[in-house]
Length: 304
Image (cartoon, rainbow, N blue to C red; front, top):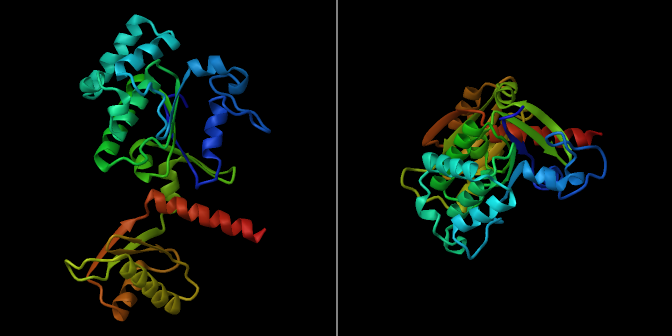
């Protein structure tokens, strides 16, 4: 639907960037058909380019030695943006985010976050109907990620621009996307509302246990040993119950399907077998749901 922000997700090698390149007209599909704004992209590259914006990760489309405003002026001429539309867009940018100091700064002098923000500004400058963002927050710190997510969301609401977002950062997905498409090895696994996806896996909850005393410095070796110990304890007791394990900082995470076993039963048994200093219970995250989809798809593929 026009104006949606769609998360286009999949593991490395799934075909995300290839799809984006086909939708932008850079690549021609080997089979099937792609239509963007009523046009076949590779057959109408110039007309397609007038109606789309693109940000590819850390590859800037701006002129390295020029101040940002000079790059904007060049893009204004390339896209034949009228003086009024150009002025209106810059005023909109100023109202949404404080970027005045960036206009006079050469791209080569910018931080990665400033450069990414500038590339996103450039992608929206000609008021395209569709913008493709390929890993837009990769390598950025938490503060800059939040700033860029807020800006993308605000621009989307103001201009009703359709945004196709590819990312491995589930923070981007949760902050921006209502609809997601999940692919793996070129096959679409899911295309629907993100809330429907969470509800589909509603029986899953995450148990997080901290096996360390307060103020203990946890090393990578300790994390590995603790994860291995928890796996051994639970797999020996709950032989036919599959769990998904992970570690995060001081915590060991166990994803539990409560339609098969109550979370509290797992926690109670763990407490009998080892000392637990802290516990957290969480509803299943978007990232965990997507991992489960990949796992199920891999099992189905092996069963064929």
